[in-house]
Length: 305
Image (cartoon, rainbow, N blue to C red; front, top):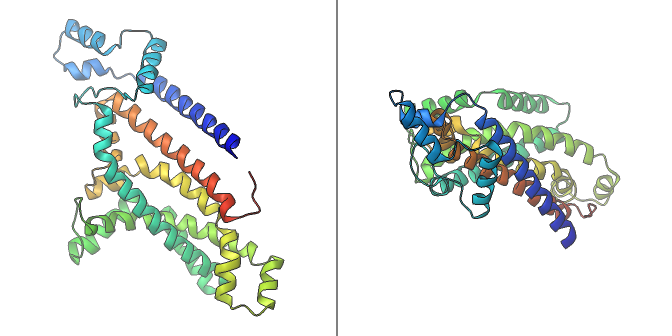
């Protein structure tokens, strides 16, 4: 087991290295010049050249990348061109808000999606099944900004149950978490329904029913645990996506996460911040899938490493 974990950690490091290399090359191939943006449009070529030299942008690309990796090994993500602060400090300041939003969104989508998937599977081919699948299709198809604005208008502006924006209390997290949960629950409902329909036809489920076990116990104790493996894998993917891929939700609800930080950096061509957020998100995806690989054998003993 230890050897397998070491091997997967090594693979994860190679993945992160590849992500860093690809992102680095793509960012430095952009036509925008960070030195020009920092100096301003009225700056002289001499001032721009001095800024480019201070930032090390006049070095060959391969040397810039090696210098970046050397600093990265020391835990240095670089310094923001625009905000004049360490990228690690900027990300660390935004990370708690992102983690809270990520955890809340995943809880909502897993609970809601799993519940709807079980209901649909137990009523396969009936009207309730069609209704649930129709709602799940609407959920996965709805744009984030539409759902966000709908919740804001209905529950914040009209009913006044929750604040319009902000961060710090439980009421502030409800609408952003519901937005992410509703959008993601459709995928989970479809996955759970598909897996559970297949599991319910297995011999051990029929045997459990023949022994006189109640339907609820058969589903919760025997069928559902064996249908949750796709869910574990999807959670691992969502961890990375929610780390930086909820820019719209954060912008609508004024949520101070790293997704909003990344969007501001893209507008300002602040390459160190873009690189830092990308690597943190890639690390989250890798760790999420790594944890999913560890948890899968615990949920289903038939899986062996």
